[in-house]
Length: 433
Image 1 (cartoon, helix red, strand yellow):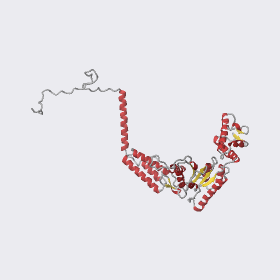
Image 2: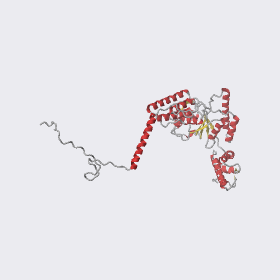
Image 3: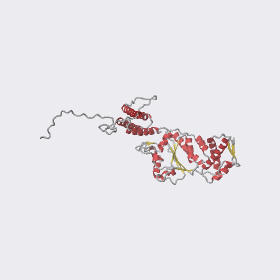
Image 4: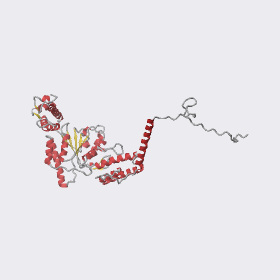
């Protein structure tokens, strides 16, 4: 008999599968007939929370889809006429900026590349967002640079002398050197016109702490009517602090030279290179290498910051340097500096400085009225004597501040309406006595 022969049809109808039941099973448990667990009835508050969560996700998805599909209207503008479109804003910024034509073309090429990235990846993509932030930051630094902006020099020898005498006692040699420098600028303008760029000497004030190196540079800037910017070299450990870092690094930014020029908003400020001898040993060679280019009039007319990556003319800037000594400055850098020694102060000079310069300034800062505080001339010798061999006036400034603070406390507390410091009561005002 063939085992593959078909089975004859049966008269019994096929059995229908049992309908699952949510009632009790044969064993008295809560299982259904076919072994399935019954559907759990969640509490109403859990059902509501799940529904709200799903609704929130749906709303976010719809909003994201709208953003992706909504075209950016480049023609829409705000009340001031500025475009709402990010890329168009950058284009308008570059168009209005005063930058070299070659650099403008580079910026426009970057903006065009940014537009291609947005059209391909979408403006919500991480690629576009990162590229936009990088491009915007670069363009802001470029347009902030004073490519053609200069302050007008105050060419008044008499006024310059008054400012120098007002801020510093003595230092006759330095003041004469400054007057000579202003005179050379005046002669150049008279003979060669206002656009002539004079090859300015790079002055370097060398002296002990507190002798007035930094403050004299500030007075020079005021006498010339130029912006003043200070670059501290103390502890500088990387030449990129001066020259910047390539913008292909995520955290790249310009160096201090470019930053100070942007802050000054003019291309002819006085740039103070403060404490040249205080750079770290490990970075000294690299930093001195940058200074060789920076301080050379033949090279700094095309100074290139690694971040900006385009030459900037520094020949209009006046560089002034300070140092405690020259032993840590390379010979090549010293060759580009005009060294001016800052003398120390004797007791007689400190007396005049304390009485006529420091005390009036401190009284003004602390809010004294002229009649509220007086110091007898006889106490200055007593105050200055214990300072010992202090070449500068910082110790003297601390003592004067101490006396003025104690006098202010007495007036505010009601112990006295006016204070007069005499040899008899000076010990109450100076802690060292």
